[in-house]
Image (cartoon, rainbow, N blue to C red):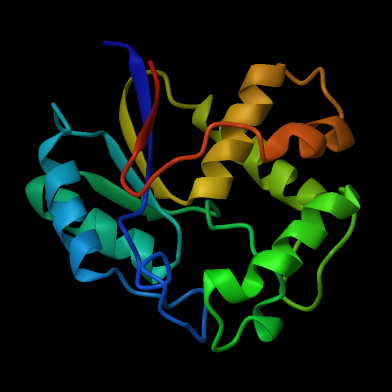
Length: 190
């Protein structure tokens, strides 16, 4: 048996559907996201050896149908959460409201910049992604399913594609041009 890792972006959240939200950690799935979670659980072809989620509600809700389908599979929470602006500045805002600030963040092109309290730098995102990659290397065989977030998946894939040969500023420069992951889209490492 070989090792296969599936990174699955969470289902559509109410924020993805355009609703203003107050706490980025507790954003729930929309009705569409709940349907997507059911569908994705049925697409997993064999019993996973490990199911991983972030601590955010939307990833745990996306994982719930899979966990119910494979009740004997071990489940863990890892630091595979989303990369966000300072949460205190995003209260009662929509993605459209934050668009200008998000663009300004990326245009700054400073991997060490932290947007504010509760945020992390791009360097910190990359360090989290590298830590997850290193941790996954400790598993020899099996199917690992990770319910996570779009920007975290992009960070994982950027690091893998660069093979550690690209500095953070260069990765940040091209980060937003990387493939984007839709809700419940899967990145497979097989």
